[in-house]
Image 1 (cartoon, rainbow, N blue to C red):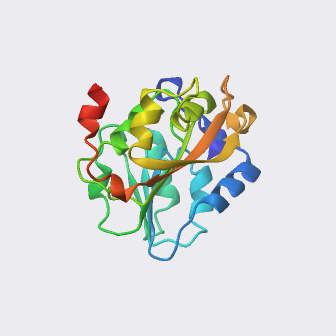
Image 2: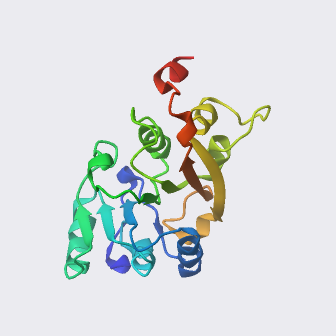
Image 3: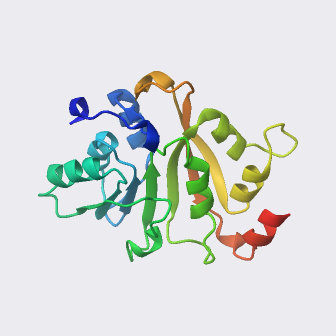
Length: 209
């Protein structure tokens, strides 16, 4: 499937081809028999192949590219617990996708919209949110800003907003050579765990400040 697909620059597509990286990343993603996994931008299904070997109840794939979505539907048509949605993650409401109490979001996010997606998923009025964890790929420089601590030059609006909602943990760095096409920058995968006790944080006011 990978050989026939050409990445679309307009969609910020960079496919991961390193099996060793995918295996390491998959091992860091915690699931159990009741976990519903929501994968954002599965592309050619490289990471999906590792996720489907893990313990889970349902696997939902959200892919904006119609051609890739069609190929994924064909690839997994006999897998009853894998569902494919040809949707744009920026506009699609993930909160209605599953009624499970154990949902994780996984995504090799397009670098050009990664911060927008993060802000969308930490801005739900209901908190704690519908998911228990997020495992998301970012451009390394942006990832360092998201996880930056106070009195650090990288500390800013995105750091404050994200950390007012989630504990952030750096999981694994993604060197540029593992992607096709190869981006000019390295990536990093962050783990986000919602902070239940921050239920009263008014994110709209915080954004204004």
